[in-house]
Length: 341
Ligand SMILES: Nc1ncnc2c1ncn2[C@@H]1O[C@H](COP(=O)(O)OP(=O)(O)OP(=O)(O)O)[C@@H](O)[C@H]1O
Image 1 (tube, rainbow, N blue to C red):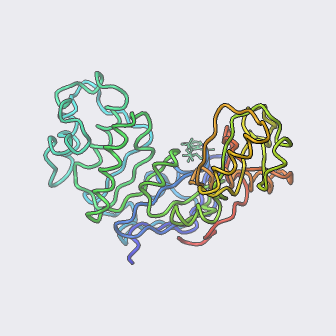
Image 2: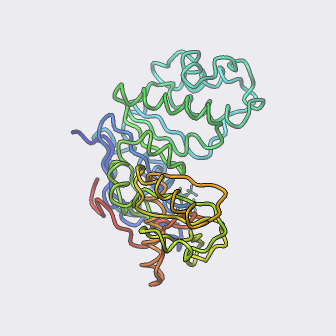
């Protein structure tokens, strides 16, 4: 397959801050590649490096087999994380305005329909809701029918229905050969859209691969979460590992008074017998749910792993939340590490 977006060993510092420390990736034509990672990991800086809107300290970037500064801008679309168009213009006028910057613009009404805003074309941008505004911004990247699209947190602030509209749009674009690089904090979004996910930490990609492979490698087992005030020791009769979730905070995991315990390694077919055993041992609980591992678990596992490598203390992934957590604040593992994807 042909790589249409490539970064090799990209380094970028802002004063004392190392934003990118040797980031490398390669994205193939028609692929959707999602960059995930904690706040400050370098996602936006990498997107800016890829789109030629920031200078590199070292490393190389190529788009459509040329430099981002010489690439035909008619073939690129880019949605920055922060984008403030002239807000007195209507949604339709904005799309027309941005379209007219290109040689062969799309019909603004087609773009409005694509982002689910056909009814809001005549509304001034300043009078749209935050989510509608973000959809207009997404639309503004489509006016030139780009071959390569960079979307920095495209669905932040968009309601669930609007988010699905944008997801379907991205899926349709990818199906017709558009290459998409997006950043997101929404693991469901990454899992649904991305052919491959890259986890950025401390300025480099420390793990990457198809979501299902990452989940297989790092996601752990399926598990039952039991809402209960009972102590994990009270579950000794179960043949499965039982833990109370630990919340992760910068500086290390902290014990939690959370009223839940997690029973690991429970297949769906075994949930009934776990419930029976709880009943027979008189364990009281207010809720019980079973879940397969997902990309959230990958994020948390890498958080725990990097916590361990950063602090030397044992981290735990079991159901903790990434509050201010860097899932790969240090040297994370990866199905592929440190090499061009
Ligand atoms: N223009 C800038 N000037 C100074 N420091 C910057 C600048 N842009 C980014 N940084 C720093 O570089 C690091 C990476 O920032 P970046 O915005 O790329 O992270 P991010 O992964 O996109 O974060 P978030 O998820 O919060 O959007 C951070 O420490 C940030 O403070």
